[in-house]
Image 1 (cartoon, chains in turn orange, brown):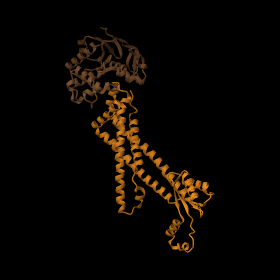
Image 2: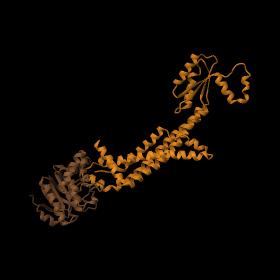
Image 3: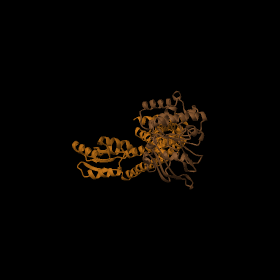
Image 4: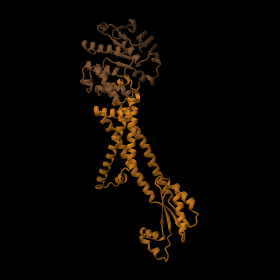
Length: 296
Length: 222
């Protein structure tokens, strides 16, 4: 504990004595994290939009007329238990008719002219966001198609395949870009911190000569790296939000619908934690790369 | 305490820094190592501090062969030795008290104990009234006294000094030597490398002479 306190106080002392190199290191990291934060913002918005698009195309389980309440409740329970199923909504015959009229106002009279409502009740199944939609839909069909009370199961296989492919692309692309950005930022950070180590080479030599272990000498640099990462990531998250609002403000007076698609929603708590965590990790890795050459 | 057996150090281009040196220094001795520039004095101290390893021969400190010392134990070896340099080697951003306390900090001594012992060490060299100043605010003589306080604050059994008076005027040099004599009187073995023959003559201690890396006079143990 005493050692950690020394590392923190020595890192703070070094900041006071060499503010220039420390400000450069933090600003460099903040700039890189700002770019990474913007990419995260765009990817998360695009991902959310694709998920929303998929939820607009649910799997419909049409029920036979006269199916009992108990049988319907049992089907709902079984649907909800299938992995990848997000929400199950019951759409009664009246609700189906209302929706038909809303969608096909011009030909709605065809239905009202009949004595009875011909539209079936159904269970509308929304798929969970992080699942293979086509696979889940196919399992629903496999498990329930022959069950009593089920008249037909319908979904757009091609549409689900396309959406799933887009979601996979967004996830894999996001992970790949994140990995590249992490490596690039860690490299840049290590280069900047190596300058800080070089500026203190005389001091480091003295410390080693009077018996400090390399780990003891490296400690304050690693703490400083963490501090650079923390400050830079908080600053970058704030800048991303400022940029997002500025873009939306500009977009409100210009025809730029794409801004709503890529920046409509702010970074949520989880993604803010990811950016801050990345900042801390990059600061630590960069500092480690910079000081790993210190040896007795 | 120190035993050199056929100690040889050559540099990559083939020149000898030390050549087949045999020497013994007993516990509690005060020994000057003299010789002109390039004689091998600094190389000898660097070998004792394990900044370098011998090309041939052996160098023992309290029976431990320093050439065989694993890298992981080099720091602990250095902590067991006090060392004073010609250019003082003080940490510029730390004030005098923290420079002295640093070696105790490295050893894991509590902060309060570090400050107490660093204060006493500075008092021992007459600088306790300057403990809050950084090296830049101290004269050369004062900086060297801070370095001496740092070297002795852990009460090491061996004190090495490489041209400790090289940057000081003659009066200050005598003052520094007086401090070394006091430290030696408390039982610490002192090895001082210097080319200042006048100073060596005035001190009247065992003197080892090196020339071109070879030992030409091992001196007489007192």
